[in-house]
Image 1 (tube, helix red, strand yellow):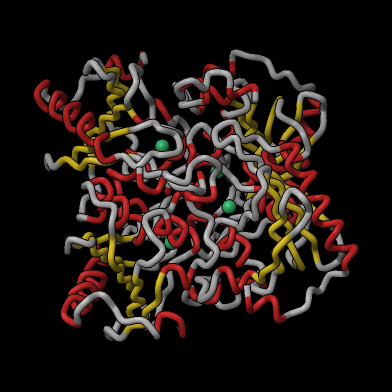
Image 2 (cartoon, protein in one colour):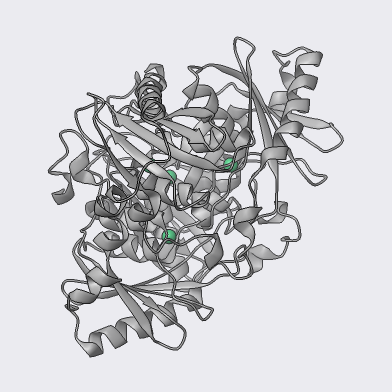
Length: 151
Length: 151
Length: 151
Length: 151
Ligand SMILES: [Zn+2]
Ligand SMILES: [Zn+2]
Ligand SMILES: [Zn+2]
Ligand SMILES: [Zn+2]
């Protein structure tokens, strides 16, 4: 991921390690009887608070909500709208990237979010949201809504 | 709502009042620049914990997550899967019922959930989820998944 | 399904048989590698045209679109907005009911839609949408949008 | 869009013009009373068939289905799974890019899809899906599902 590799994380090493730990722990509450694929996320706000999320699936597959979106709605519902970074972990030995639905959802709150894809062994890759959803369709693309992101 | 009117709430009057208060307060964090329609929810677990949720919208309208689902994923991500009741409030003088997406999402965790539709003046109506989503498509309808609800 | 049992279908027996046949055939194009659960739907407009739909799943489970919604967006994209009935079939010997997401989606176009749940052996049950999504949240519930359904 | 600018379209000029014309026409059937934002799409299969789609919104904002997904489910439900290009048009003078939900949905059927963002005056920009959803989470990322894309 060349673009992001050029930038430096806004987080300290210990903050990154904490986010990784929390994303791995967040998997524990996953409700994923259909995919049998547990995912955890940990989202850090600009003022240093961390929200854990997990995937919550549904018999109607289309009703599933991913770990990343769970973390976001938790934070937003507690009054937070500015975020620095999110870490995402899954169960098997692999780097998992957010799905397009989550990229779209996160984009509403800023393109410069740092995303850490965490492996079981705590190794990770890193990207910026804008690198994962370039030319995003966002609040500024709706007519007369250019101010909406601030709402 | 005749069916539910016949049953008695598992909540005491003061528990109902508390749930109403929390659902009204939950609206404050709503992110709803597109509908301009703030919704709040308060979800009570069987062990008496309450989770507040609000709607979180998206420039891609289809990405929106309702207040009820926000409250549910918050609770699930904190380890809760058994719920007694949810109260839902909106901004204008009206009783609002959960959309079908939320009914489907909530059904995953039990058909007997009590739902309170709360008006601005704290008056409310009450129903049981099964009354709002009769003949639901649920975990037991998927082949070989009859045990999934317990997962 | 007592309520609907009291009403008489607007369709003739041969029209019902045709809808059943088409919903069974519609399963053939199902893209369902994740649930391995093929679903077909056949939607009849007020002017007698029938649109077939199938479920189309996605690696991100939440991206799945059900057979019913596929049939609806096909019809709407061809200029149709008034519907009489939909038949829904699945693979295994069972009556399948639409999920809450589909009930919500169909409600946008009228509460009196007839729904046939079809078994593999062509036996079926029948309901009216309003029976499956009572007290629906619809276009008329949004502020200043009471005319939207006609849009 | 530098990456795609380096590649050459698999379509002839007249095929591109036809796709643009059909995407503009597809807007006519849009059901968009909430966003008041009509979108049209035209999807071309590898064997030269074109499917038109439009956005179909819902009172529950989260129930909305975009024009791109409408075109895809139409095509899949008619037996098509291999696609060359999609053109997307909206009403106001702007290049519109697909939302992340649609990018995720389209990715299921191949990363090399050409996407044309069409302006009202028929000018357009072009990208490849992989450029818009890099490091996608797809069928190959699910355990034991590496063969699913072919299903
Ligand atoms: Zn996701
Ligand atoms: Zn809802
Ligand atoms: Zn459905
Ligand atoms: Zn879209």
